[in-house]
Amino acid sequence: MVKVENRRKLKWCLVHYDLGEISCKWASKHLEVTPRRFLQLCAKYKSTGKIPDIGFNVGRPKKEIPPEWKQIIKQEYEKNRLNAVYLEKTINAKYGIHIPHNMIHKVLLELEYAQHEKSKQKRRKPWIRLNVVIRFHWCTWIGIFAKTENVSALFWTMPQGRYLLQANSNINPRRTRF
Image 1: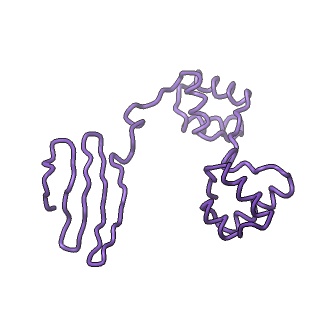
Image 2: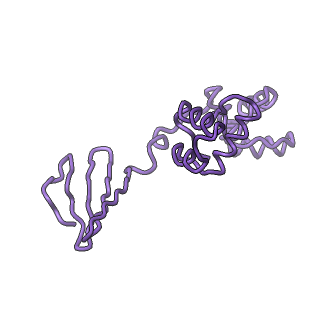
């Protein structure tokens, strides 16, 4: 579902759609949602009389960890000094309770028995890529903006080849063919 960014726009569209001044198709294009989604919002508005909240409290609710589980995890860790995966197996064998290892790890972090590994806290992909397409009547240029920690560059591709047009860092910013 698309999150409606502007509640004022949504209210205006719902009120004027109810009055018959605008069409469903126009309102859905204006809000950048599908016509079906706009009709769902209209139905909610008519039934409650309030502007529906969009994009809030969505997704799966977080589970609270019961205090009994925290106590079991604490006892087993102090007894065995195992990581979360092995604690999961020992608790399952001993108590017959399945506690997911990621939940065990959260409890261990809370109790300061475990710590985050700094090497695993970095960004997985070292670059960000944004694609831009510009079409002229005689050719198509495709722009690729690549960014790493110390270099950002803009490449433009034509059927003849790829050119580096802009860069900052130690890359020579003049027009270079790749």
